[in-house]
Image (cartoon, rainbow, N blue to C red; front, top):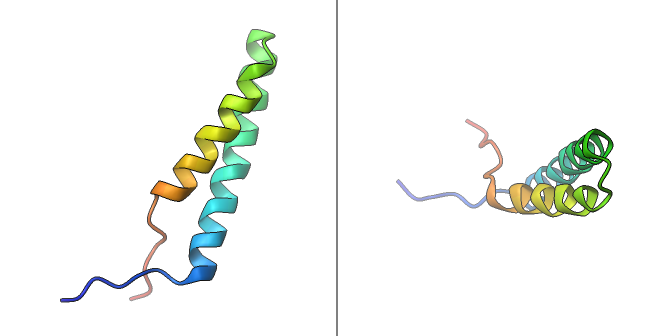
Length: 59
């Protein structure tokens, strides 16, 4: 069974979802702690998560 590479659109949408989740988490933690640099950390975590996660495959 050969491993299929995900489509380019699926990778792009996965990265966008990760970025949006990172922004939401970063804003939430920033407001909770009062430290604005958590926003940047949330964005970075979202981008990395979006890059590392594998998009769902079509069966």
